[in-house]
Length: 412
Image 1 (spheres, one colour):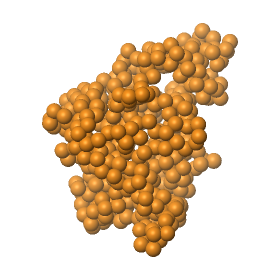
Image 2 (cartoon, rainbow, N blue to C red):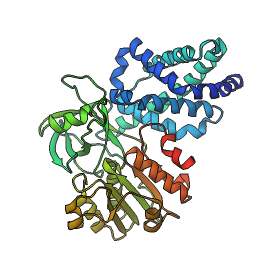
Image 3 (tube, rainbow, N blue to C red):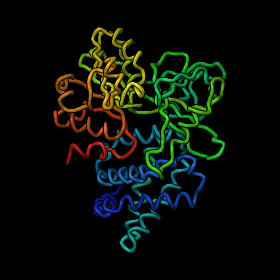
Image 4 (cartoon, rainbow, N blue to C red):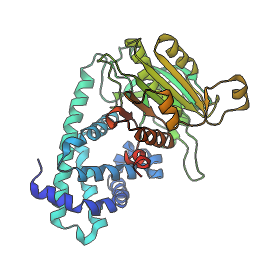
């Protein structure tokens, strides 16, 4: 536990740190990559380029400092961090590297205001958080190893099938190269793909498992990420997977991780609503298929939003979901339908998800909501749920970046 003195110091400097948090994290990454370039292997450089990682870390620091006297409330955030770290194979000896450069960044940004007493308090607070994360990660690694077919690190998998799901999404069916068993996993989890790119060394990538557990393969469904602005890079690994990886090739795969999951152990009595935008359908499809397979009578609502039929993935699987569950309702929305989409009635509704759709189509008064998709989609969904007074304990989502980016519209 932290001393009262340390808690007091950290709470006193929290407003200053919050005001300069993104500057601190930018300096932190610069210092760490310069001083310990070996850690760049763990960081997605496109997220560095966009500023997403800097903003996410800034949000995490502010949340930790703000709740320094109520660490219990940070349990979900710590679980997210621990799962992500285990997906990348982070080890205890790497924590001091982060701590050293974080303190140096705070000292540089705060200048003379960063007294020895303040730096000592921040160092103590960081070490406590590191110890909590290290212990949770030790448990996760042990749980992974203990599963039948489980492993730590990376295991070679063969690409057995490669199937186009839409103009932008391709599914990869992966089987262990050693023909050994696959471990059990929880719907919503992701696996890690590590690729030795021929021209540009880069970090491993996480991809949601898009089919239900119990198969003799892992399936990931990857969207080809194009450059959104002239200066932004296209998705290095997503394009490599689409263009270069073929059936019969071998990929290095990390074990399933992630905390955005659907618990199937309890019999579902209240409805579950899945709201999917774009490639965000992948973890939700896994959850929905798993729920209907284990509890066919479960009340389930699945809304899928896409641009049009060219980008609409898993149409057949959503129809099968509806056929297999007597209490399944589906809704397909296009915001830019093609002329042929209109003629062939390829979708149910034109436009974007709004409060009226959620109020009129879902049992929002008592349903559990799970949603995933692009940032604007998620911001909009969260804002709608907030306006409908859906309690936060019934709202579940997965998003790279600070949670406040999703919640900001609802709270403004």
